[in-house]
Amino acid sequence: MAYIRKLKNGTFQACIYKGRDLNGKMIREYITRQREKDCIAAARDIEIDVENQSLLNVSNMRFNIWADKWLEMKKPEIEDSTFISYKMYIETHFKPVFGKYKLSQINDLHVKDYLSKELSSHSSTSVRKYFGVLSNIFYTALKRKSPMLELKSPKVEKYTPCVPTEEQAALLHRCVKGTFDELPFLLAAHAGMREGEIFALTWADVDFNNSIIYIVKSRGITEEGYKNKKPKSERGIRRVVLPEYLVQLLKSKRPIDYKKSSAPIFNMRPDSYSGRWANLMDKLGTPEITFHNLRHYQATVMYRNGIPDQYAAQRLGHDVVVLKKIYQHLQSNDNKAMDDRMKDIFNEELAAANNAQNNAQNVSSGNNAIKTNLNTLRSAKIKRLNKPL
Image (tube, rainbow, N blue to C red; front, side):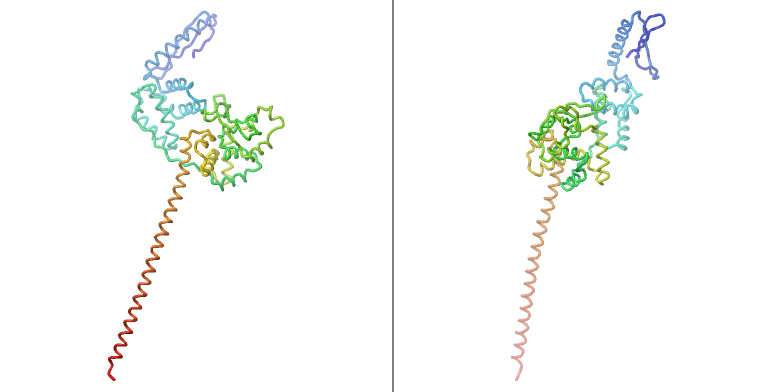
């Protein structure tokens, strides 16, 4: 954006940034007009010309300039939280490596070297995210000439969530019972709510007469800080039936004028509670159980009790396909149990067969001994009969 200032002679001057030369030096153009509004209009015309010209020669743009432009174009299409993540990737991961180069100067070897270094210090899941964003940045500008066109995204490490067992869940409940943490714990583990959904709840969202919570918003990060927004998909808008003990706990917490209150039930940000929960798990010696894993626990309870996939997906605000991916580790555990049982069955059958064979051999050995003894007796008797008197 042009910088406008009033000169001593009463006229107005605009300074317009037009990019950098081959040595990286900033290129500026100055214009002067009698009136401020004329100066602003003229500066804007120049900026539009510069922008259009740069888009025609995008391959000659430096990466840091194009990345900012790409993010600006992408902003209307993505969620605020996604925008913030992309901005962090660009500023923290991409610009320090590619920022000073023109797009046309960056080749696949540069990108391979960058990915290799990222994989040495970050998980493959994180690097896959960087890969996707970086690939889109290059492809939007260069299309089939993108240096990442033939590169493959890093393989995903197989992730199995650490879902609490029934015994662990019961222990966690006993540990948080009567504390601030009990209600968030139960809303996640027994109602399947996401962290952002829990911390966006107001008393108006709770139907005490019918034991239902209506989930219509989620608290998430934006450029202006944490704010309530719509759930990330239409499936996120849902009603969840609560068990009676959870309804009673909510009743014990509600203010007298709760029907008129628009205040959140929890006066805390989701990210702050994530840290609180992590500290609690460290103290209990179970740091692997994240707050989000409690939602997976809700899924396991429904799976173990034969709740239909469609109902379970609706309760959790998931697509059925996504839900089945969550269930995969449960099915894997069930398969292992069945595998172990099959081993036991065949081991038992083999042991029974061996016992039968041993018994048969013992009987055969006994019969042979009897025959030998009878033959010996017969032989001795014959010898006595043949003995001369």
